[in-house]
Image (cartoon, rainbow, N blue to C red; front, side, top):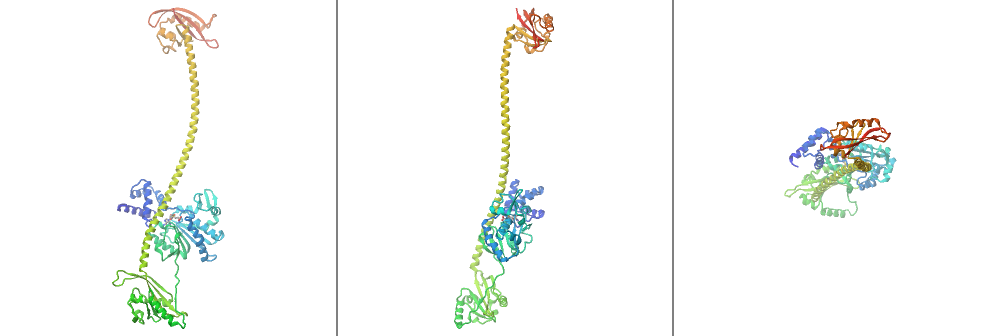
Length: 612
Ligand SMILES: C[S@@+](CC[C@H](N)C(=O)[O-])C[C@H]1O[C@@H](n2cnc3c(N)ncnc32)[C@H](O)[C@@H]1O
């Protein structure tokens, strides 16, 4: 990332702090950049500055951003091996140390949606029994994320969230409610959920067991240091600290000692117990023993000197002689007159304290750069009071352990471990992010499945509609077939009628009772030179044809009015002079018949014309 982008990123963090009170500056930058990067990708934005503007315009994006930054991934009994050790070792040891009846205080720091806190409750209840758990255990569970805490407080989880809880525990500690399974109400009282910002708020106090799992790793080294200091303060002497599998306490060897490194279980270091060097027994062989002691001291691999009760140098071994430029002539001199009393470190006051308190003192990592040496050497200096069996002080012995090589190795190891730890933490947080991404993918998948189901149901509906359409189509086809067959019947009937009409005479026309043309045969078209559609519906007398209609009009009206004569339906045959379509004179017979309905009433006339 270039310098400009880094600046924009810092501005963005500052904006979150100033406008929303969320200070992410103590979090690992790489993690933050990756998580915010994902929001940018989702919103198709390129730069942090654009994202800042977006946040200003769309304040609800803050919620989505915090959700993405405060990675809430968690599970019941996460890392089962660690929970085994917790149940088998830590809880019994706590019960022992506490003695009967004393309250046990537990803190789940960064508890997310509560699964860890309820796992703790089940683990304690299983080891102590439900009743004693209810009387003696308080579990404080805190997080920065209010939304996650709401879920934790509700204590209702789905079947899927409970997959890692063994069936026996599920049956014992959960009851079915609407929307899932709820943690038992009577035991729920032992858990207290609250908001606590590990970077700012005061820790819970007098805690016997502190779980801060998979939470520290999101912070940078400096913030981790300050949080671990608070944890040290929060714990009772010899209290347990339980971290996530990616988390180590490399910089805190003075505050915590490992109990089981595989599962990241540590214990607070309490006040150290001191040891004493006993003076040899006062026997007849004392001289021999002292001689032996002096020889052993002289040959010892560690530089040592001993002072008597008056503060005079009495014993010097060969390594001390070489190291501090001392020799036998210095024996008997007051210690304070010797350079070794203040170089490499001020020892006079330490000796004084040791003599007063009758307790050993240790000065660690004393660096001494001797003139002419290429580099400084490191010593751990131990000052031990020498007492007679009755307790009377007879002097002190001072040992100078050269730990230069060991410290160098330790530093190298620490560096390597730190690099390893960083890589591991990165890996773990990446892993958690992947889990979140996986969950997001799962939810997208679920959405897709829902959409798919919706599509399936739409498809089924469409199939039903299709089937209905198909059956309507079949019906239509059937109707069509019927119509077609009727139409051919009709065609047949028509051609039959046409053939009948043709057989009646050269030209045939049918008129209604008002003498309007109803039918005009092809022969009539041929004879008069006008087409059926030109004459249909028109009055016979209005037609421009060569038939002298006026001459037959009287007969026609009579036929309409008079009804059938005695001889049948033929009214009259009239022979007329006409003019055909070519304008030639033509003589023809016109036979007029009545057209009757079923009730025999007349409703028109048939005119059959034959050329003579
Ligand atoms: C990955 S979860 C760990 C949950 C649980 N301890 C476990 O191991 O399953 C990390 C939790 O740390 C919380 N967290 C992040 N910053 C925090 C802060 N400054 N103070 C308290 N909790 C914080 C997040 O909200 C998130 O719920």
